[in-house]
Image: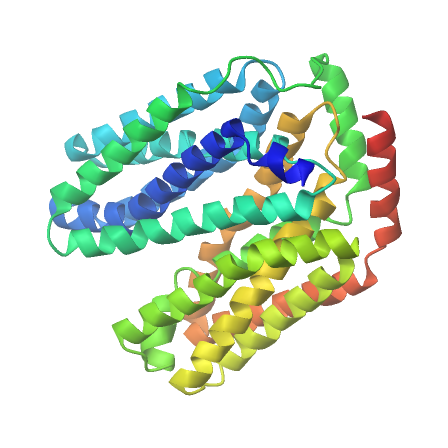
Length: 398
């Protein structure tokens, strides 16, 4: 009970509000607004829009490492405020971005403010209730990211300018909330010389070398599906737009509903192995089942199980990763690991698009399902005793 009270204090609730707004802006802007606004209003070609979206994710991914380093050395308040100011500037530039380079630059600036608040939240999570607290953070993240496109799609049916103003106002609101953050670096963080930090991180990377391929493959497998899901739903599953929306709501709802309970269960049982093994295996099996052209009601059931599988994986995976984060380098450590995971986010859509164009859209789902099945088998073999030893060492050093 004491841990819960400490976690749900005013400062962490403030971080949660900023995180929600930032992910809401990302979902509404990148997934819904920018592709439509860039093509219909600004008259830009689809390849330019694709480059702009890639620029957003590249900026977000690459800067995670730099931002993590900065968070270990200067006030988180300054880092978050500067990032959100640049994000607001990027959004403000969109109506004036008639040339391709301006639109790409605006999108890149838009991506800068996304990273800091997430890494700040990660550094505030305690080891004692990590899965529970990560379940809460993932819930906030998922609701924000999911609500953004839904609200934007509704508004875009009536007004593009109104949708743009919603993005701008949300960004300004996030920036205003960041002014309430307390100054100063995180407690317990030591300023270590840069070369010494690199030495520590190199040692950690050697310790977790078995995890590195999985980190990239997990995000690659998920992001492979992004460019093909709408066409897969309409052409292969024969779903209407309303049915596809309901499918997404069911999957997302079960994910959000399962994050906190499954996170608490993972903390209570004290083991993460079977959450990862069963979660990834179920995810792969459900994806493969979707490729077998089930009925609409079967699709809803599969979406619900997919959501619960995802909810089981996220907190447990974060708890495993946390054991490799240097105690005195929370910002830099999480920044580095988020950057590695971001590699999969960048290459996944490209891989999915190539497979879809050469073999077919259902093949993307099959390959993604096989990938998640293999990851589940990998965690069945993974030496979790090393994870336990690392956690014990980190607590002694902390």
